[in-house]
Every structure is written in structure tokens, then in C-alpha cells.
Image (cartoon, rainbow, N blue to C red; front, side, top):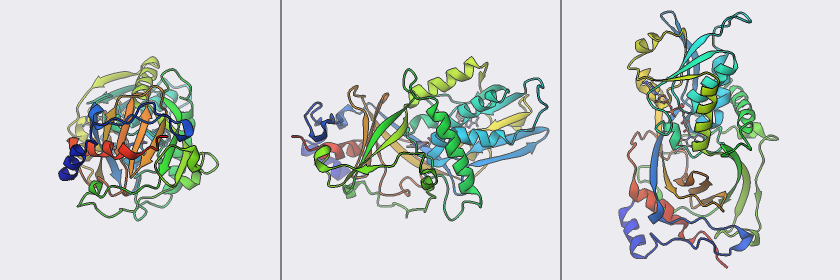
Length: 381
Ligand SMILES: Cc1cc2nc3c(=O)[nH]c(=O)nc-3n(C[C@H](O)[C@H](O)[C@H](O)COP(=O)(O)OP(=O)(O)OC[C@H]3O[C@@H](n4cnc5c(N)ncnc54)[C@H](O)[C@@H]3O)c2cc1C
């Protein structure tokens, strides 16, 4: 990030200046209170991207069946349930009414938790082995919105049949996420997202930004299921932008969702065991004969899978506002009022942002600069 730019903003009194919290605005929306001085946390997460899409396949090691379910890029939360269902199909079949099969799941992120729950629903007795649990898993650093085709594969590398499998995963996941609506704590809920056509601050475009990698976009396969957006008349929105579109979006309040999934797993008789595996041989020593490998970016080291590419993303967190419940994309930055905090994240200019960048250290200056972009985001009347 551009330090000089940050200093300029600081001297202009813009950093640290809170927006008026309850100012009357056109459209009646309360402004998000976005002040760099209120950042209380910065998280960095690596999307586990594979050019060919998530790895969902079985492998035999010794007498064990290892079923891989990792590499979901920017879509792990969104596709989790459907991906678990695809992986479950690869488990060896068993006679009806046989004794419950004991299986292992490695990993307790979005993919591991949903894999474990899907296996329990199929009558299996599940133990999750994991080095980290929420909030220390990388899944804890996700934006938390329904983005089933975000950085999930490259158009140039996705195998034949990928789009069909993606659609199955997305539809299955959609149904399951919907089953968590309306619960206490709102693990999943609807939120209006406003998008504006405002220009990005050039200071936020990294000098070494790689070209747009050309990811697959498949959401048009879900038309008829997922609500579409519409333009909002200027007098009906408070934002300082010519063109604004609004779309209802499903979002995941990740703190509540992760806790809910963990509780559901424990209530169904599941067990967590802390474990750190150094190699596939280590994994094969587990007592269970069927093992789901849901290690996300960790599979790059554990399974020596260098087809996994890190795609870095950073989020700045501000205190939640009880009366504010929408998301807004302005100048290539997204702010979203989740219940566990308002999150602010650079999303533009394109999918090349953070590409092949494995740096998990937070960039505080960059976080402050992204939040400061919102200083002129509202037309206050
Ligand atoms: C900034 C950002 C925003 C995002 N926003 C969204 C979004 O809005 N919607 C969406 O759907 N997706 C989003 N994603 C993508 C999503 O976060 C990932 O796809 C998802 O977290 C992958 O989950 P996972 O369970 O595979 O991996 P992880 O969360 O990394 O979990 C891996 C698990 O495996 C364990 N593990 C790993 N290696 C070992 C080992 N050797 N031994 C023992 N245990 C091991 C870990 O401890 C952990 O429990 C975002 C990603 C980023 C970076």
C-alpha cells in the first residue's frame, strides 16, 4: 500500500474521522460508521485455490480409503454442504442396517465441519481430528457471503463436467444453508447488498498486481433460484454514486455459524481430537478405515499438493452497529454489517488481487486506507 497516500489522508484529518452515525440520509438507511480509528481486528486468510477446482476424489493408502475434499478457493463456505455430499458418495458402500461405520474427518474449518455433519446424517460415527478449530481456522477469516463461484477454478483448466458438478454442489448447499435461517443468533440470514459504480483509488491497486487469471463464473446456472439485483433510483439511496444496484444476498455470520455447526456435531455424538499430521503415512495410522481429508490450504504441505495456490485476502473489522444491516461496495471496497462486526475488504479491481501471495501477516496501513475510502460514501441531507 501507498504510505504517502495514507499520510496525506491522515494530515487532511480524514483518517480517524467517524461518519455521522445517525445522520438522516436519502433512502432512510443509517450510514455505516466506518472510521479507521475503530478497527479492532485485522484478519488475513488464504483462499486454497486450484485451477481445476476443488479436489474431491478417493485414494487408497494401505488398507485405508482417503477421500479428499479440499481446494475451494473463495467458495468454501458457500459450496461446503454440496461438496460434502459429493465426497460422501465416494465412501465405500455398506449393507443396509450394518453397524454404524466409524470414520475420521481431518479438519474443522467450513469443509471439515460440514463433511462431518453430512457423514453423521448418513449414519456414520465421526471423529474430527484437527490442528485448529474456530476461530483459528482459515475459514474464520472469510467474508461470509454466498459466493459459490468465487475463485473456484480457471476457465482454461476446469475439467469437462466441472460446471455440472459445481451446480449440484451449489444447489445442495443452497438448500442446506437455507435450513439455518431464522435460528437464534442468525447463523445464516438475508442482507441487502448495494453495489456502486464508483472508481477505485489508484493507491489501492498494487504495483505488482497480476493480470486477471480468468476464473470460471457459473452463477447464471442458478437463475430462478437466487434473487437478481435491480437498479435503485438516486433519490432512494444515500450513497454518493451515480449508479447503484441492490441485491438480496445470503450471508453467513461466521461466529454463530461455526458454533452452530460444532454444537450440532457434538449433539449428534461427534468427537473432536486435537491432532497435527505431518504426512499421509501419519494420516493412514488413524484407526478409522475411511478418512475425509478436509485440510484446505494445509493440504499443500500435508499432501504435497502444489496445485493449491494461495490467494490472500485481508479484512478490517469494526464494531457492529445494531441498527445497520446491509452491505455496500464503494470504490472497489466492500463493507458488510455482519452481526459479529462490520467487515471491510478490498475486492477490486479483479480476481488477480492477492494471487499467489502466501503472506498471512496483516497490513495495518492498508486496512486503514481501505476503511478511509468510505469517508465520502454518503450524501448526507
Ligand atoms: C478474505 C477471504 C474471504 C472469503 N470469503 C468467502 C465468502 O464470503 N464465502 C465463501 O464461501 N468463501 C469465502 N472464502 C473462502 C473460504 O474461506 C475458504 O474456501 C474456506 O475457508 C476453506 O475451508 P477449509 O475448511 O477447506 O479450510 P480451513 O478453514 O483452512 O480448515 C482446514 C482445517 O484443517 C486443519 N489442518 C490443516 N492441515 C492439518 C494437518 N497437517 N494436521 C491436522 N489438521 C490440519 C486445520 O487446522 C483446519 O481445522 C474467503 C476466503 C478469504 C481468504
